[in-house]
Each structure stands twice: as C-alpha cells, then as structure tokens.
Length: 534
Image 1 (spheres, one colour):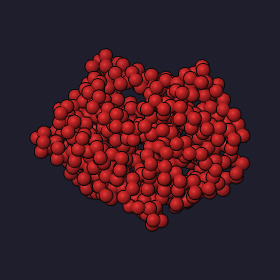
Image 2 (image 1 turned 90 degrees about the vertical axis):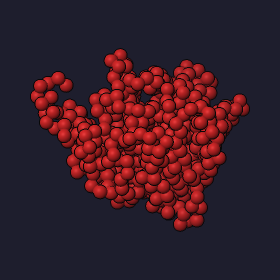
Image 3 (image 1 turned 135 degrees about the vertical axis):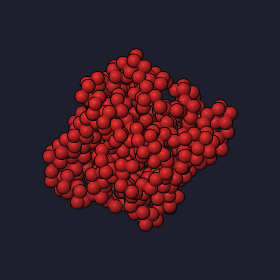
Image 4 (image 1 turned 45 degrees about the vertical axis):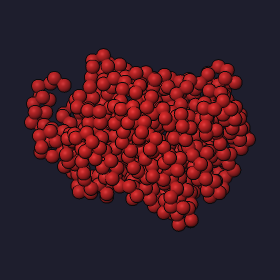
C-alpha cells in the first residue's frame, strides 16, 4: 500500500512486528504466547494492510461458525454434550492463527482463501450430519439419505448419486480434529488399548478404533462403505468399526500395488460392486449424467493443480507450505468434484499465481533459504510444522506428498472409459498411493524433489508404521548419493505423547545447526515448551 497514512502507521508500529523483532534481537513469534500454550497475548502485527486482511479472514471464519450453530442449534448443542471431539473445534481460531504466522502479502491472501473454503465446507457438514444423527434423536427416515464412507475413499463416485449425501466417517471425529487439537486423539487411543488393541500399532488406526469403541461416530444412513486404504492396519480398523456401528457394509478393497497390470481390472470390479452395494441398500440407480458433471469439476481442479505445479518449480509462487497442503488434501479427499465453490477458489488463486510469477513476487520477503519436499503425513498431524520450518530456518515446503495424489483426468462421455479412469483416481488416494502403493512410488520422492527444484527432503518417520520402517537406511543412502539434504522427522501421528512436538522440531534444529551450521531466522522458536497447546 502506498498510502502515506498507512506508511506512517507501519513505521510507528513496526516494533510490534515479530519478524522485525526477531531480526533485531528483540523477540520473535514465540514472545507473543503465554508459556506452554498456543494462546497468544495479542494478534500478530503484520502492517496495516495485512493485519486487516488477517482480521477480516478471522471474521469470515467466525461467521461460518455462527451460521453452523444457527442452522442446527439443538443438534449442535447435543453434539457438544454427546461427543468429546466437538469441544475441540472451539480451538479452530487459534489453530488458523498458528497456521499462518509470518505470512504477509499474497501468500497470506491465498492462505486465507484456502482456509475459508475448508471452514465453510466443514461447518456446513458438521451441522448437516449432527441434524441427521440418530444418536442425537434424528429419525431413521431423516437419516436414510446419508451414506457413511471411509474418509480415504475419494467421494467422486458419489456424485453419481445426486439424492444421497456422502459422509466421510472418520473426518469429523478423527482426521480433521487431530490437526486442531493434538490432545484429543490420545484419549481415543487409550480407549482402543483398554479393549486390548496392541500399543504398537499405527496411532491413526488406533484412534479411529477408539472413536468407534467409545461410540463417538455419528450414526447415519442405511449402510456403510469401508476400505482397506491406506494400509492393512486400516483394514483391521474397518472391521472394528463395522462391528461397533452395526450397519450393513461393503469393504472396497482396492489393489494395494496398483501399478501392476492386473490391478486395474480387479480394482474396477471393486468400484462396480461398491456402486451396486449402494444401489441395493438405498434403492436408487447410479446417474451417469450427474457423475459426469462431478467429473468435469474434478478435471478442472486437477488441470489447475497441474498448472500450479509449474509455478511451484519457481521461486515466485505465493502458494506455499501448509496453505497448499491442507487445502489440496481437503479438496481432493473430501470435496473431490462435489462442490463448485472449490472450482471458484481455484480459478481465483491461479489468477493470482500467474500475476505473481509475471511480477517475480517472492514469498516471505525472499528470505527463504531452502526448498523442501515433505514426504509423509506429518503436515497433517502437526499442521503448523511447515510454517515453523519457514519462520525458524527459512525452509519453504514447496509440495507435500499428499498433494501428489491421483490427478488423472476422468472421461466425461463414455461410461466404460470413465469407470477405468475413476478406478485409477480412487486407487491413488490419500497416503495410500505413496505410502503403501509399492516401492516405485515411495522411491519417486527423488524425482519429485528434483522436478520441483528442491535441495531438501523432509521424510516423516512414523515410528509405528510397519510398512515404512524398513526403508530408512535405503533412503539415507540414496540421499547421500543424489546430494539432497535429507532429514527424517520422527513422530507418532496422533499420539503426541510418544514423540513431542519439540522432539519433532529438534530433528530439524539439529540438522540445520550441526550439519549446515546455519543460524535461525527467529531464535524464539528454536526451542520452546508448547506441551499445553492445542
């Protein structure tokens, strides 16, 4: 902004900017927080313009929350009373503030566009599901049009059932809420273990099992579609869930190693049987016309995503870090061609990115030191981690593994070809494609990092993942041969008691200070106690 008044205010208020304070040895981002918490004493000052952008976005998110409660006040009230996880959504505003610390200019604008898209979608979904939840008093007839499906089964196929409403079963009580509140899932993990589940299994699967055993899933619909994705532990979780929920179910067990020639016919048969299962239990027919409409929206999203990748390869992309990761994960997994609002957001964002490239706009004031490819789900569990890496060490996470999910186009004219395309897209779902889809997919990290001009790979080391533990030494050896800075980040997904957030940050701290001998951009966030934070 060139307004003289704004310039004058910015010059006087600069001393409250945490980035300026860090550069001048007077504090930094962590100085704003109460000890051990994620609660800030005051909002981040970003200059007049960006502070107003940030506060305006806060008001928009607040309005979405208010609309949610206003649209279904009694079910929402009952939801808070019935479900422990509902209370954790009250931390949403602190969660968003933490996500975009240090963001300025275009990267802040895009980040809030993306986050509002998620917030308005999620709040509508929460209100709708709770108002149809039989646990909360909804009638069977009212609930009968909802179809619970496993959250890692992409929803595109459900656009062929325009009269039905898909409910990603684990998204509300587990998948999304673990981002907002890192203290909620250990409770459900303990519930699962108290029933005899071994303590060394994947904590995501343990948490989902605990939600089922604690009767914390909303009960909706006539039948449920489960899956074997992303791994064998998840397949066991599906068994626990269907026994507890008690609805008829079909398990969509798509081929794990889906690059094999024989995989497509097998997985296609599974998709056809999934559709037939819904037709039978909901007394309806798959509508190719409405499916093709959904596929066209999905195709446009994928086309724009591929164009975004061209800008990600340059230093001039204002879409960065968690703003890219979280949005793409939600758009691809939970929206998947069903909501035209996301197409509108994508069109606006790509327009901004085109202009930013033309203007040679550098995010974070050009202070980025490294370009990193993040491999694994840590950015989902510990969502402000990509923001912390940039603010503390100048590591810009260009792309995350989950953003490399199925981006093939789906035919919108021929049902036979479209079914093959839909199957391919579904096979390459969240986490499953790169985590357990075969060694070739895991090993492609080097190709991804090279194509996006990254000098660093952050490989998340889930200590309870039996599938990935065996590749540790091989990845280290390849990184040395190929010349990448390579950092394994230990974590235990939903269970922050096993590996603390500071332990995760120390994996980066030690490499940056000991191996690369670099100094932090903000010393206040190198080491701090946030054990009581959401």
